[in-house]
Amino acid sequence: MALKALLNYHVLDSVQCSEAIMYGSTYTTLEGSNIEIGCDGDSLTVNGQKMVNRKDIVTSNGVIHLINQVLIPDAAMQIFDLTSSKQSIFHDFVEETGISAAFTDEHYTLLVPINDAFTEEIMGFDQRYLKQVLRNHILRVKVVLNELYNGQRLETMGGNFLRVFIYRTAVCIENSCMTRGSREGRNGVLHTIRKVIFPAEKSMLQILREDPRFSIFLSLAESVGLTEVFTEGGDWTLFVPTNDAFESLTESELEELRRDKNALRHILLYHLLKGVYIGGGIENGVTNVLKSFQGSRVMIKLLNNTMLVNNVKSKESDLMANNGVIHVVSSLLFPKDLPVGSDYLQRILTKIIKTIEIKFTPGYTYREIKLPIISSSSTFTTFRIEGEPLREHEREITRVIQGESSRRTGHGNRRIPDGSRRARHAMKRLPRRRKDTGLKKI
View (cartoon, rainbow, N blue to C red):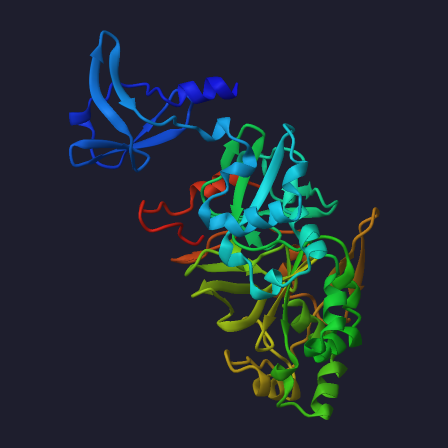
């Protein structure tokens, strides 16, 4: 098969004389891959290299150009040899740690980070730990792009599982998104990714408890019984303000905030989304409208590689948990369409939220929110206050628990889809690049 691929890579399915070839023209070979034929003065180039000794030998069924090199297609090469100069660090590390010696003619999938992904910290890992990290970038099965789907779990050579997330214009493995240009070799496929992958081992609750920056947010969640949500299985996105967001409040004001438990639940659940939305999966410059677990809309945008949530900057994004992702934000979030019914709550929220005006509706009360307890019986925990009949806004809150699908709203605002499409549809939407500029960011 490799020999057949090599021979067919030298044959085009059309007649191309030298005078008809335009600079940088791309043609499909019988093998199925493309080659680029161009001109350099009076000489022809193949894939950017001068290698044509004699051109335009016309025959009864075509034309022959003699070259001084053998053209080798990806399909005739070992997958490990398909790494480019922009992936040389991964290539060198795999060789130095002895992993490459374990490759056989079985099929593999390589998830290869670009060189820029290897930070000083990663470069300083001891070889034993580095080998473990690298093994989590190798699958013992061939998985091409159109076989990836949202929610898929891939087992690595290191024995860990990686999650696949499909967005409108991005395909991501954990928090590392692919770039255009996957390559298939004789024993597998290579996908280029933007970051080094570290499989998530801790729940969102464990991450919150182990980081002192989140102690106030966590204490608020504990006071209204929401911490179980952060440790449940499933896929979640959580926006967490650091303690700095509450620095203008006194301890007595924090106690007042904890006292109105139903209002506080609504506020905190506005920070929670069903589904995993990582920074690399968001289209740059496009406002994405998502529905929070509380029921109101959340606006997310990526601008100059910084995530904005309702125009609040994310200090740090993509803290991966085994049940979702955490984005660190610089302010408490509050839905624009949700009023408050007490003057003390309006006063407290106005002190710490500067991006919107807090609406005041005297006597307004918050209604029930059902919290799913993930189990085989799919039970719910319900928080409820007795009182007047539900308003339309509260009825909408109960529907969000059902995972209502999103829709487009307004000019230039797009909803992030539910991710049911396969990877090939997302990658097709990536912007095409000029040949001399390198890969564009998703």
